Length: 326
Image (cartoon, rainbow, N blue to C red):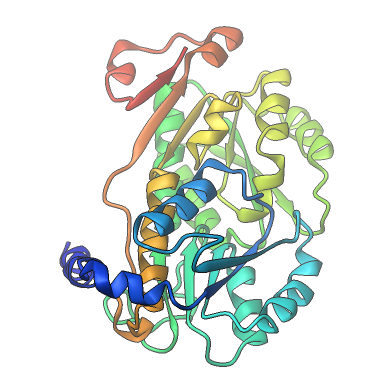
């Protein structure tokens, strides 16, 4: 909580500038470079990011230009897109999603500040920042604590399906920390895992589901990776078709037909990233800006999917849900 208070103190001071100061900023145009691994700008959380920038004085078409690039799920395209962004004379870069996304932006640029949205990795453990409280260097942002959350998702899935003994897990090269936590949790819960590791794009989800069925998996846990975003609808729909109750790390996946999700509110998370971008545009140093972490988490249950799978959700489990899709 101390990290959060420190951030909010800095945020309150800098965002409370007099209107005159904001008006003075409008005299120049700021440029934000934004590299996405898969998501389009039409995703709700991306819309929330742009909206928040406008609320704090940075409006596209007036004093802000956003250079948006997406690799559309092709990891091999990230370096060339990062190089292109580095040529755009950006004031700050936004690096959401995978660690690979952050790494290529760091490599392509020398001293431009970077705001990361660490979806599927620990930025301290991977060496990108010195600490959450004082990141040092030119990188700050928000981090979702996915390693701890992955194990919690397995626990919730097992709680809902106490008889399940075999659970398929979708993983890729960016989810190593999450997978390790889930494997440790599986031992405690007495669950056998069938890990489907995706290593080459485009990912072959059809083969992964076929292998899950052959392994007699009784449920599916999809680890949180920016590389899976392009299949946000395909995976839940396939899980339902193969009658696999599924758990995800983003409520949008539950809305697309997944049974469960347990995660921070993504739109709110991206709004916090926008706050940090705005602070940098107003002159703050990333090295002194604490990395934000979520403080609340949402359990979402898709009751339509539960009914289609013939699963009865106990009242005690329903009572813990923050939202139910009917």
